[in-house]
Image (cartoon, rainbow, N blue to C red; front, side):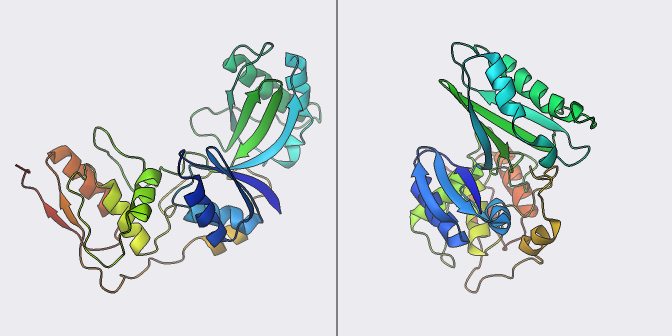
Length: 287
């Protein structure tokens, strides 16, 4: 069993806990900003593919005390990175938090990067390269006073980036928050749904995906476990949906009203990539 952490927007922790338990997570513990839980490799993939509320799925790697920059370096290097990285995998480090020793997050990230790279060179292995834009592995380090927590971000990009949208409106709502609003609204799939301030249609799209039991991660093209040495491709393929779900009985259309033409185009673009149900659209401005 792996000890894991799912982050989410504040206020959604209990809702996320319920969702994770339905997926099979055990030992769920709610904290501010997320849920600690336990699960096997299959549960990791299920939470990544099926959670509508989690922002990220994090795999903790270890902690160390940091009273100097050398403490940070040695604490990170104590982790067996050669068993975490696939050969040739690129990585990026996200460092947050400061203390009396580490007064700059970029400096902290550099020390973490040096420790990881040196862990390979000291074993006469090819050093992994840094890729800040699209890394195979994302290493997160949080420094809280004198304690540094090191973790692997298995999500890659945030899970709110579903992959079904190529454009947005001026002030889009995050997909994870939209899904939470739909869940808490009391709306029942199969009944009419109207969003008179739909913008780019995120609420409607998330409702349609929920109603048709469509995996929110189905359209994502990149994951944070692509360079993880413990990734099990066979289990991942079993977890991935094999085919598109059929329409839900009673589902007819999603009424959509927009006063902004660009938002309407963004909405239709997003739904074109998410063929979960027929939709109807009204292009007439509200008065």
